[in-house]
Image (cartoon, rainbow, N blue to C red; front, side):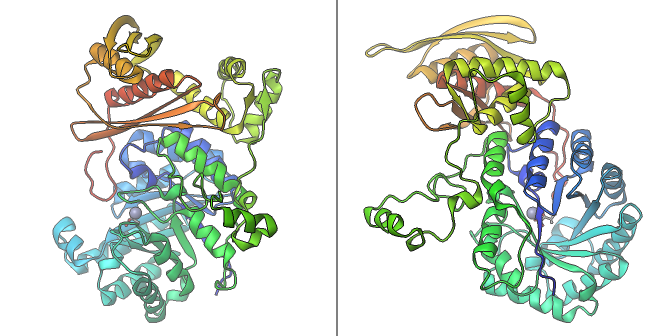
Length: 515
Ligand code: KIV
Ligand code: ZN
């Protein structure tokens, strides 16, 4: 059995299915470059048939990376597969991932197909996908609730049809570790041609077991794990890449395989995904949470000072927690700025974009003397927002806030280029700003989340604000960063409002519904 555990990252496909986590083309390219630097084996970059934007993003990722396979998702439909094939055409190494549900409930209620028809469709889709790529993956969706005899039949048929990877999804996160491990062992044992394909797993986290189930499957012979940065994904998310990789690496005494991941890229990737999607990482999250390596209890601190291994099973620096390092400052020039961005995998297509980002950098360096990588990532996200087709733009903002007085905000906004002004009181400065903006926009959206976090340490740090808005069932996230958290809050709100007015024509890969 192979010693290599393939890491298949689906942050930009399944992760993007989290309400509000959508990413634009440039953001996907930035994430793809970091994943490539991390030495992820396969990047699932999107679902090309979902929208022209998804198609273009998958294409752009194919052009941006060369050391990683780029995969496109397709339902078991000719139109989906053709679109996926066209999207990965320029990839140095491209894969099509096609799927159809095999559980009784999905076949009966969702597909309204008989099991025989499902087998036929699965086989036809794999054959069709092989016309566009040698590397074809098949998933029996909701395998975790499918009948094992039927799974064996489908898997044998798709391997004969040319599938090189067979992925077993626990789509609804229903399985328990022993059960899921046993399922993988049984499938590998009973399917006569199982040695002709790599067995993969794709676990959702509805019962908090996605990582445990994936690892149980690896123990039983699975050699690909589908996972996401920060565990982002549908509902409770997918198995988290950083936890899978570090569990296998740290417990080499228990695993007969390992990944080729450069673990020092884990924290930068986690920060980038959080920064782009606005999904914050909880402080006690394993590996990438702010407290993951912090020792509070005196007895622990004492132990760690005497010998690190007393309380630490991993080294913070091995997963990319370098001590905050000043990378640039107010006297850094354009070349140093450009070189540092290139190190972070960021390149601007046009010189004028670099100039405008550099001007923002200088403004920031005037307010904040030390500029860290995290500041640069936030600055580039802001730069992308500034160049997006904005319906609303913040022109100016003034807030009066003093003890014993009601805060009042005055804002000037450009609405489709026309300047409008408003003034509103609020229970606090942020509330006043949001009320003033709303009096101009009248968005009728509901604020579901407002959160502020510091990008780096110190009181001169930039504050990063995330807001989540809901309107008629649609959920969007907005974010903004600034050393002034009231301005960051206004930027985040405006970013979310701009997303709400943008048209959506995407479809959900599994339900087929517009999202
Ligand atoms: O969860 C799931 O079943 C999926 C498939 C498309 C693999 O995401
Ligand atoms: Zn999934």
